[in-house]
Image (cartoon, rainbow over all chains, first blue to last red):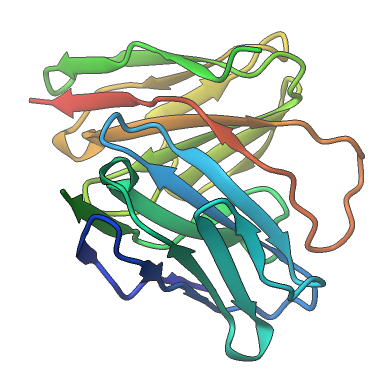
Length: 115
Length: 121
């Protein structure tokens, strides 16, 4: 199976620090999409970003930025000036190869931002 | 514009009982998905519908699990003869496919509901 790996199980930072969450994926596809979701303690998965493999430009949205590197199969997520409300589990995901429908998720990174 | 809703949010049951969960997708979304998430893991795909047709099922979906989407709107997921290993969060998601045949690797965004947390005693 083609995996999504989030090697960092837990990260703890102090408020206002920058933090980067790593995501490495396996793929045999030439074109594909990648996603990041946030899961706060309430449990609902909140969509953050969808990127396709054609576009390797970094993307910035407010305090969030994403670094997509096709050569290393990585799609890392950086939060600048972290806030306590950023505390959540963050998941990286990609469509399961051979199926355009089901998403394969990494095991997630628990981010704790301390005041 | 309401999001995906799920009912109930929590369910505690005894082993051997049947349970049924409901999911209401975002209005006009034609695709609906069920995932299961156990503690410390990412969600795992169970099944997906396009309108009322169930098009894919995971090997995780044993014979005790059945899902329906009778009118192409809300969906139900039933677990018969529950086992302790069924304890998990059951997540529903929906998406809007604007083309019938997507290009290879194409994938629309799936929007998730709050989940139903099941505990089997």
